[in-house]
Length: 102
Image (cartoon, rainbow, N blue to C red):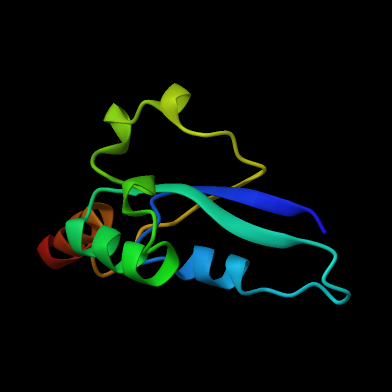
């Protein structure tokens, strides 16, 4: 059974990874395993580590993605990336401010 190594940017607390590593194919023809992840929020990184990879905390990189050294990351077979949470997104805040001033 092949195992796909998952890399993830903007991982948040790990919802996408949790779904991937706990998914089952009909005949269990493959599995997914965490390789590395990145997010800028310290609490999200801590939660991700606890829920997804407690034995490999160094594989969760907490910091600005613009400073991430992609070439230093291990090779992966699958890639996922999170989307901004509406209630925390900087963009969402700006849109709400624009609506209030109109």
